[in-house]
Image 1 (spheres, helix red, strand yellow):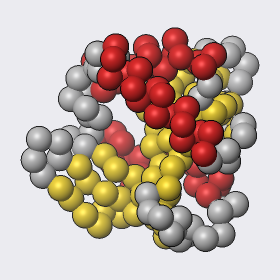
Image 2 (cartoon, helix red, strand yellow):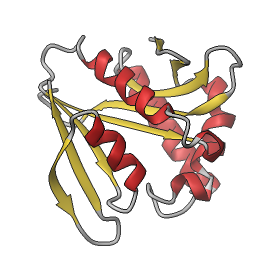
Image 3 (tube, one colour):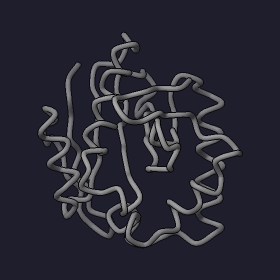
Image 4 (spheres, one colour):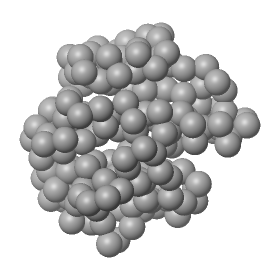
Length: 165
């Protein structure tokens, strides 16, 4: 299923998008707040395979390649997946290649995912999970009405932000 927003088009990740996906997941700057560093080829391929499996299992959600509507340029990846078996929580995620930071794409991506969530009546909450040091992502979530409800610490600290539908 494809989604669109003001400037962007979102298509479920397919084999045809492997090159863009691999570039995104192996980029140290992109992955700084996700895994701490870019993934190696094997790790990135495993994540890509998992994304394909998720998209096949859930045809109206999953992992999306995000491109500019007019130029077709690869902007980044969006995530829209269930967090619980009851399907009452959906994790929303967004990430851009560094050259696209600071242009409002994260906010546009999140708003698109929030709108898409309206077509899932059983879903009660959207969850954004971020590294607490990623101030830009925290700001995107809170400006859209998400509120902090949980934090974890350790090797990969995370803050969980919730938006009630």
